[in-house]
Image 1 (cartoon, rainbow, N blue to C red):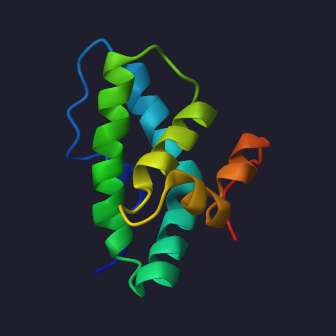
Image 2 (cartoon, helix red, strand yellow; image 1 turned 90 degrees about the vertical axis):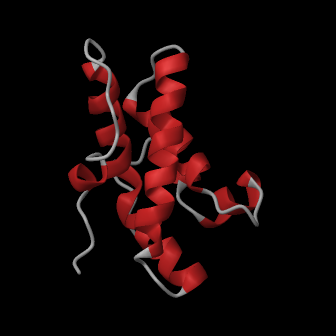
Length: 113
């Protein structure tokens, strides 16, 4: 089974009508960190397919946050999504030091190894 694209990852999320910005923002955030998420799942768990399940949970949390909070730009949404992607066994700070959050915060165009 091939790894899904960022667009494929949004299929099971319900985006409220009139809030198309949330879908666009979430998609941009996914696109920014998706490759890093796959690489991280492969290096930490030996299976990049786990990134799909972990990302689906993170996307749901991001969309919930965007629905309840104030609007954010795609760069900030990428940071939030990466934090929601953190596995339960590590703190956000430990995970961020190993993942691409510092590069996103510095305004890097992409998040690739």
